[in-house]
Image 1 (cartoon, rainbow, N blue to C red):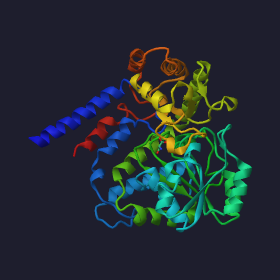
Image 2: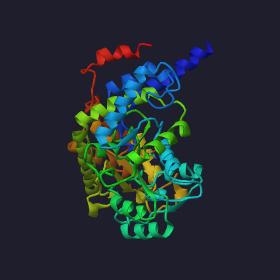
Image 3: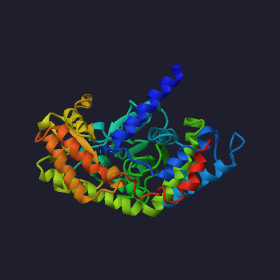
Image 4: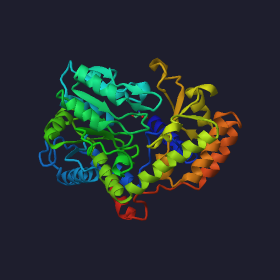
Length: 428
Ligand code: DSN
């Protein structure tokens, strides 16, 4: 009886969440929605099974079809990114970064990464993956006005500290990173470049951001659910000579069983991206620029006006004058506009609960079919809240009205394409 009540309350909360999300503007830059075709894969029997090891060399029986799917997923990833090797087993982006660090470093080594306030992810820092590996982390020099890594200082720093790894890529990631220069400098001291592409993986695959593999990065890591709208999980792409070290770092190093339903869902997402990726990535970046321009025109302090605001799916806004990131993100949530508070370069990192800024992403709104004219209107709604021109509860009504027209996931295989046949796969 109690069990049933518990289940009902969980189901009710999930249903309420779904209903509410349909009325919101999802602008958290690290999220996205999967297509119906990808979702079908997530509820298949693959989610019940074990397949430790590599395809064809499993430690369990019963993996014939699982091997087929994982090999397809690896092939699609290699094709889409032009990579020599792909490992699709990491269960998250942090696990992918851990795998790269376990493969390329020894405890006690030094690595370089971006400060969190400069956009670096926690898994580039000793509080996370590098700490687990016993590494010393030093910081990449950063130009706070241009929101880019300072190339000359970076090269000097690499020569000085001789890092095993230079971690590029970021969570606040407006402009490309100097991959070629980092590769040249770090190879001279016997190290590697790991490019964490979590945020921009889909933009890279769609040809709308820098291409770290072509620029020489030894390893590219990522999560598979941000601008690449796949299932939540991780991926590592690398040069052929590092393949065995990466594979061994993932298994048996960091995962026992990987998540097989994730692999099936990722294979479908990658196939979708071959079809729709270029257009989706282009529209996402176009929307980010349009949103930034409109917010700036409304009087908000969008970072990097002098550089065109952004070249990715993200924009950053300094809202110190309006009460700070925490207050503003909460007010926006009251208007059903979801974004996150974010540290900006001048913030003390101990202030992550009360930073100067907010970060906004356009990848999910784009996926729902919105374009530059919607960005302009959304900028007006955001400015209404941020500048206190209207009560969030008033703005919420306009948000709900706007969102009513945008309920379907675009740029993916939907219910019109084989969903009938796929739906029986969930029948377990
Ligand atoms: N740190 C998360 C973000 O950028 O939102 C991703 O892991």
